[in-house]
Length: 328
Image (tube, rainbow, N blue to C red):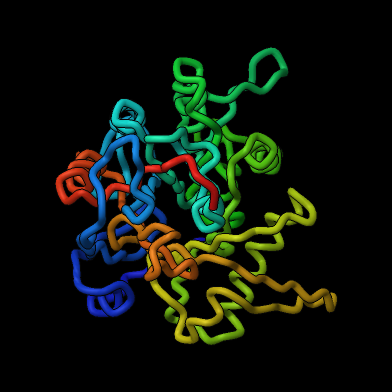
């Protein structure tokens, strides 16, 4: 189950660097320090800028009201999509970014990565009508699909960082009816729908444990059991991305990428990730940048006007990635 940890600010800062420390939507504290993008080559134009920065946006709860960094309104989420679309951004997944796959980005436009942490029912809910399940249009997925109807080139490309066994409804998007009317038997159907419809599935541990507190065996169990839960929905899936709960690394950092756990029945579960997502740090370097580190990527927490400020900064500093339509 999910625990709510009151970790010290010093611990969080040590995990991510200097910055503000905020409570996150799934419990605990998170460092939100943000690095400023460095110099790049060209301004946003049709010629492209492969060395520019790419915003990886981080969303948590999207609901009726806003609170802190991790709970925003539906209106704010819609405005973020509208802003990004109007300014020439198109969505891709984390896995696509790492693979230098910009096939979903038209020439002269820029990629943006949406990541959704903690698998809350506000991100993906069903409504039952006459025995049939429909995607709740007020959930993030429902809003995404409505936006897509108006803008067909806004594809189903985002990365969902999943918790299968956390508290307060954070168990594959809701496991009890008190959480937006969601039923336990709907959980796997939602995860499979995301996979089948072009979204990336990312592991976020079993119940959002603060990995920095635990020994190597516990860390591997948390990560491996999260992996196992995803595989139980989509057998044989190659999960490429792992998101650190609260942005805090395990004592043995290598275990965030690779490890194993053996269940009581003797079954061994292994995991091997290409990328680990941090909580903050600003827009990511381009995969064409010689200094790009595919093993760990920074993100931008999407709250208030942060998305707009990030886009403005990229344009002002001439550091915006613009796809030139070429080959990898």
